[in-house]
Length: 230
Image (cartoon, rainbow, N blue to C red; front, side, top):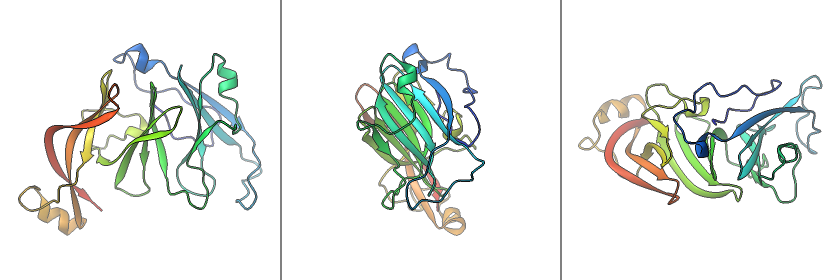
């Protein structure tokens, strides 16, 4: 089930896209909207007294992920824990000693994660505050980072909003996307290079790639392209 960016609204909207093309192992996640009032930590900005803090709970048989907007910076704060047989207990708001925290909103936190998807034992997030984006994949519930790579999605399809296309797609095998590689763009290997340099001042070579769930690794599929960067 696609993860949505947590909001200050009461509850969570169900996914707008169909999961019928996915096997039960991919489509088995559930999402719950939790609205609570929490006191901010010392030194943090005080929330609007009339506002509530929304937590979203994303859960499957393996892991439970609680997500809420950061209070002091951009992005989402996640609490990752192992799932039990009790959804109510799993989704109870409040950090536990065994929770893994992603995006702790502290002074050294440089993440700006936006939710994309909880699939099997993987939490897929988009990261960044500008036009250039990074794809990050964590193993859950350990929160071990498996992949961090620049990527782009052409055609206005935003994975963090639940959009899936040939540019960014999930199936039983894995996640297929356009991954930034280390090759340096030049007029020879980058169609449109001159225009990119004039309009944005930067470009990147990307390779169509697949992150394979079984192997937990990413591999190129042989097709490349050049895209603008900023």
